[in-house]
Length: 626
Ligand code: GLC
Image (cartoon, rainbow, N blue to C red; front, side, top):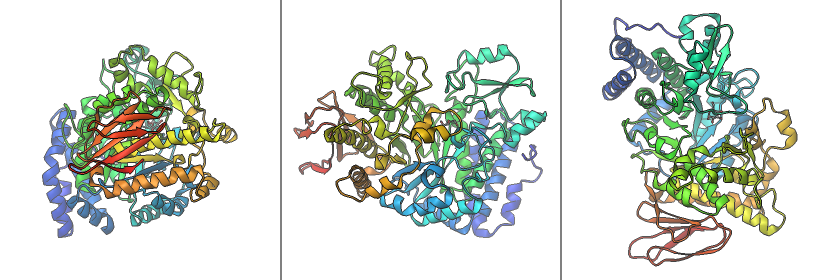
């Protein structure tokens, strides 16, 4: 239950420090001296200055000190070592993401897969939501009924602690989702609200008349237009419409109420003390609602994330924050604290435009949109990294590319529509076997589902040449992600060319969500093939291992080294420069190309071929991998 919300008479955190061991007390006091003013400043910007902010600051500091003091010695030491080496996560990072149940049954099963992950060079494991989910449909766990209790289907608190420990020993950081924007309709806050408790009603965003709903809806896009249209759900017991951006059972939290921020950040810190080393901040863009806007990426979102970062820097500075903001390219840099809302914010952010644009490039055999995305991507601040990826548990959302498509003269986004038809396998000549998501209307592009292998044509290949080309496409996309990213993230199964979820499995899954198409169960038989030369699995797996090795060995692959699009003489080839010494060329066409490098370099790329080159002044360019 939330704590009371008035400024305490005697500062609780000062009292706690007075009673603590001197080494922890000194260190925490130092961190507060550094972060405290920033924290207060960001809260002042978000909430009206005065007593309220003072009380909130006090309570956040008290919570942070409490967490810092309760941190296990191992985690406390880890924090100290990471503080002295803030770029600890910057070199050779490789990520892997999976649902616990599909990957390994439960949390204990994940322990048994650690050697496998290590062999792939993984340093960062994002397990999709594993805390207690809503009864019934729960959006793959993203409707969270309790932030701190492990979902019983997946294990216990002890299992979680054992897993984090085992991963840490193996040099792998565990990333947990933290769903900031909403809670499940059966979370205790929602239950209390429904019972009529005004304190908890104020935890949620609500509209009190149809007119109010209509006024908001005028400016709001829809995330699930087919299966969950609109952004509000009428609750008879409340005689009000609850704001539900995603599914009706996911209730948007009201961050204009400072108690919500206090409770959410406090819960996050408690989870950090379970050994979680990174948080995926789910749906970050939606936290602040402002009339007359689309209620995405508002300045307060960034002030709140910066306040969150400041609190975490006090309590658990070894923990990373990752923004999940599936937004157009120009909206992403603020999540690193760049732009009009400057300040230390997230360490990592998904580059969803780059991901989607690489798929468009494949469909069109033309890199113009991808190139524009790269041109619009600024260098990240020191110590931060782009998270790059080919696929994840969500659909490929096409609309993030609207600004680039429009700037290239495609006013009605026909190129995006065509790409979505291509990957749904309904365009002539398509090799893909995906499916459109949330688009009963064939004239709009929304999203596309399907595993990488199905989208690149592995499942439709008729001949060995077809299959080889399909695998080449898969490797091309991964090579781009590994070349460009600070943290390239693999989605479970892609390292083995795993196909779509089987039809009979799909039928048994609860809740009609098209994204289940790319949420297959682990296939051990495929995993076994990865060590057998001549198999597709071996080809893909060993290539990924080689990428991971290179990323570890070359400083130019530090996460914050800038990547820029350089001139490409071919419309099918993306040319990139990473730092001063690396160049990458990526051919998105089924034709071989002779691409002349800008310095007289003669490069030939096979169909869907690529090359990473090391180009040091005064020495001939060296091929690192192709
Ligand atoms: C994020 C998740 C997605 C989920 C949504 C709502 O976008 O990746 O799977 O549906 O948030 O929580």
